[in-house]
Length: 76
Image (tube, rainbow, N blue to C red; front, side):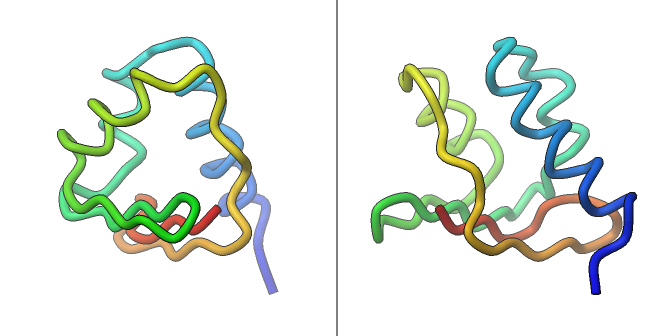
């Protein structure tokens, strides 16, 4: 069962990406995040930010995991 806090965190991540607000994104995502899109996994917050900054849009997560109230794993 997911809580509102979890849903709010995921929504906030998507809003930060859309806005290009990498400072907000960095606060919401674990430093060792595992970000998977189309079967390709990128590890580390800095690498994920570089990857996402080159995208026009990011798909919502099919699944995700939080650690310490930050997104640790994202699969879309």
